[in-house]
Length: 472
Image 1 (cartoon, helix red, strand yellow):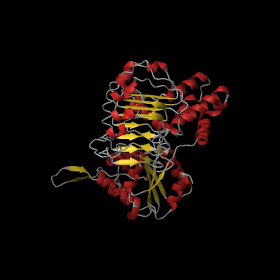
Image 2: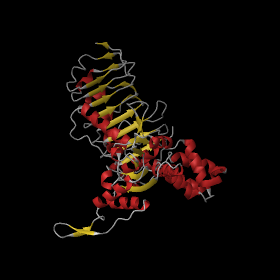
Image 3: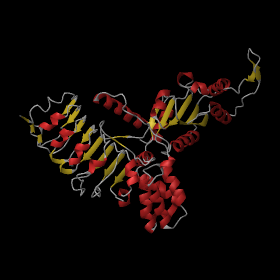
Image 4: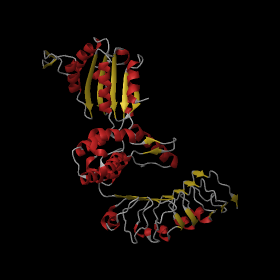
């Protein structure tokens, strides 16, 4: 059932007085709520339907004024004096207006009050809007980006999702006209629609800009710009740190809390189960843009521009490098990344990617290293230079010799999940700071050297799902 239908049903439910719709910015909350208002008026569900925008910095007086104007109200300007003789307008102050607005709304047998674009908790009583048991004839419809905002007001909430590919393409064609389906423009138009990620505001904005342009180069230029969003156009997003965290469990709890907050704000999406989540493509692009604002994040995904490798100034400033895809064939020799703390590489088994043996020589501050699904045989010898490394994740890697890991004395998290190692060497027992060891799904693992696990004196969590060990 569509969100529109759900909201309409909630409006008819006598037990629901406050209804909330939430979704990421640009998903179409205002458009949808105006359509709800239009249909409610057409079907004569209410005697009155009134609308006001709240905004990020709400002006209660302005909201009251918008509602009053639609109800044909006028706030009187009669002056009264307080006990000090100071004169002020009786109904120009917020409480005075709220009392009069409240009384006016209660005169209606059935009324719908729509408050759009709420960013924080809103006291309906302060505005002068009856709710709940105050007046059953008054229904309140709210929109917000964050579900928590609606939950604190006690509303029945509905999430507004992005458009699917078919809906997005239909909207784009409607806004551009027939030109989107003509010749070479058609292929570019389809790519543009996909890059918009189902966000109506992005689709409509681009479609209107391209509607009267028949030159394919203009459409291709729009597509290129869409793939390279400007970091200067976006506000900051939720920032969480792990300062003051002492145990793996505490860190996990804090991360889970942050993930849920991001889901509630529609910046992350539910995955196939509770252990997984996904990110909308547009949000991902924005996040990368924000992270790259000071040129401290370097990312590559499937495509490689050799000029980026040559930008040594960029690499020297980077704190994070993320490489992902099949088409990255090699990493240049002699990387100098003195500020690098997080290094991630994902390369499927058939990837031609080769890792230089001296790759870590210029990364003295590296704290987190993730090599995912790579065919390594042995780790680069320069890994022993990472004296400050705290997390090493080698999930799904093809590995033979991992003895060198034992030299990483400060390591706290080691994940070998899904690796094809056959033997856990005694050198792993030298990791006396290790708090988490994950050997899950290491189907080939048969032997763990004597005393390895007992020597891990700080170990808090050990995972060995599906392992069949012959203990020495």
